[in-house]
Length: 439
Ligand code: GDP
Ligand code: MG
Figure 1: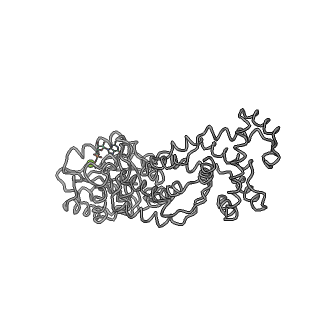
Figure 2: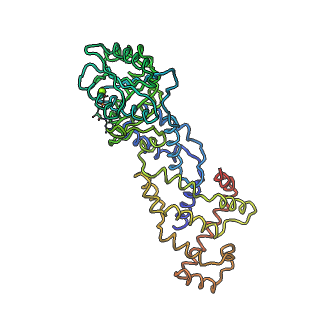
Figure 3: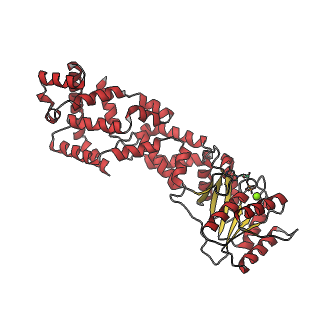
């Protein structure tokens, strides 16, 4: 019936619920799926879901959110918090040269990122030196040499046949005596974690005493990123993470896994092979990417913004003096709904299962517009006091709205039912709920 559909909509518009096991169950399943699809490691997903559930239960659903949307908001907040809340910058506050040591598996993007960082720091007017300790692959040293030349950044030329730790010491000496601000030291990686590699990087760390030890990890690595991150975190006092290859189709789950395992901030993300392809890490954006929920989050923000707070206060006041919910208030609700792009847009922005759930109590936009049209054709007096609507007024309104008198009658009947419902709600705490919307 229309009444039950309307009450469904009102319920949607004004979340009158608290989050409960029941009303978040479906959205929680959705989130779990999204995280797994984004390649967040399973144990991390489990911990996270349990944590979110504990935080969410009992929360009031504010403004115009549905419980599912409210949960997603909690999820987004928690994801953002988990990933560090704010942008973490490089810390170079030390007696120069500030050393940045690059660590990570082969192919993760250490050499590329070394060059990107050099470029960034050069732009900040720092005197930068690039050095490579990757003696195992001559091509690797040549790669960095060429990048340095291209960027017009100095490159430390190590004598041939020297061990990595000796190169590191010599490069540091070189940087110190020539007053470099920053020395970026690139290292060799292996395709998989092995003891020799870990011993070497530890020795390099010991020799260089870097202020930044960056763990470089490929976002496409997905589930495996956890184990690699754990191994490097145990071997070295990491100061930050660089997540590379985010320009690919990686959903970014590695960000959450790596952060959860190391507890270290992600400082940069790599977004292309080019030296310009380095960006600060934005936890909030990454949270959205990991959730992969399209525009849901922007929709939630939109909905909150457009809840007209003055309107809410006015309605709350009316309820208090016992005048009740009138057609004017009803129309305001419909307009708010349309500001959000109507039902179609709303459903469009929801991810699959949520959209299907919403379809359950959907109402088409044509009907919404028709109701609004009828109310528009009324005078303010009539809206405030529908009891004065006798036959001649109804005819005038119907003609104005381009509908039949029976449509007007139907609306009035439904509205009366709804008014009763609102009255009973106001006793049960609608006023309190509306005040909640202001916060
Ligand atoms: P390393 O072995 O850790 O030094 O890794 P490299 O820096 O040599 O990078 C390995 C490959 O990944 C190279 O082909 C790079 O061009 C590429 N690469 C590195 N970072 C990024 C990135 O952020 N985006 C893309 N698309 N490619 C990257
Ligand atoms: Mg390399």
